[in-house]
Image 1 (cartoon, helix red, strand yellow):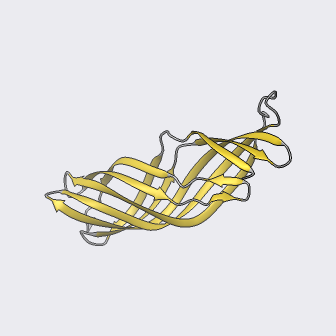
Image 2 (cartoon, rainbow, N blue to C red):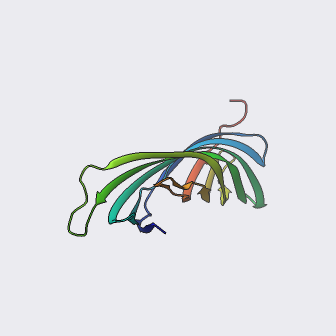
Image 3 (cartoon, rainbow, N blue to C red):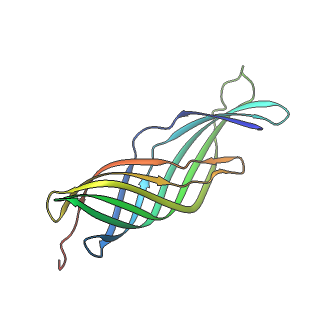
Length: 169
């Protein structure tokens, strides 16, 4: 292996917004935008000489999903989401050529983007026919590496409130 990677930080807060159409009590279609938390990785490559790089990755996703809700008891249930996503990552790379140097101040910027699958699951509770609370997990498949640049395959955990506009309005 010519490149060793260490994840320094990959937690934090992100956010999601979506709009959808409820086909019936079980099926819905949704289009979403997700901003994932930033990640930091540190790597060392061994291409005849050793140098170190610190990469900050900012990732966002656009997705189109089919959502299936399964009522379990009363107003509570389970949901499953599957679809496609366009995952866009901006890698900001700072280099250090030896252990005695600090990282170069001006980062190189590289964009990594691809189409791939997205899927997830969660649980929900309907307070009213229009207002739903849910907690969910969503997996966005990235490309891992594209040449020398890295794109994560992030997990997104969410707590949220959904407002459904009643039919006929």
